Length: 220
Ligand SMILES: [Zn+2]
Image 1 (tube, helix red, strand yellow):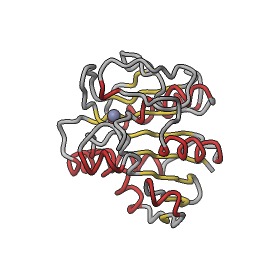
Image 2 (cartoon, rainbow, N blue to C red; image 1 turned 90 degrees about the vertical axis):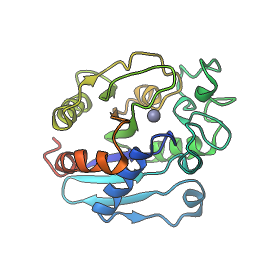
Image 3 (cartoon, helix red, strand yellow; image 1 turned 135 degrees about the horizontal axis):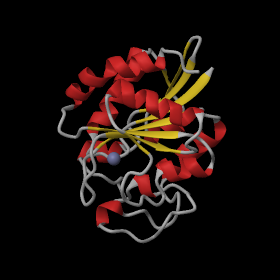
């Protein structure tokens, strides 16, 4: 059985991603964890879609950002620049990309790394929109990992279903990103960037049928 982590709400200014992840957890009737360590930071849902997939869903990774419409967390840290990847850097272009004072300095990042290390995910799907500050990029399915692999095949399948271009380079450097970390630990990671112009209800209405078709389809 394939094991997936679906992550939403990494950037609080991209509420569409949290909405889609929450609705997926509801759609599949996943169980919400009551573990206080999780509850304090974010929701964590788990469940099996027999016989093919097991899902772990974190819809609100950056709960503060989602509540306050900020890219960063309560300490102004861009959680997608705070992963303990080899390429983590203390340099940043703009304060909204503040990577934190050290790799995995943030409690959300620490717990995410623990979840990733304790599970052997076949694939991590991180939901975003193409909301931008400095670096405009089109809606897309971005893949981090080895290009001749099951993971890359999944990116191509998702790109086709969602009618979004598949890229392996987002067009600018993202030190300390989840994608960089996943590459390092050899876990395929797909970042889906929805069109930021769509409302959260609009993104769900447009893409939910295909995402559900994917998760309940033949995962290889
Ligand atoms: Zn984002």
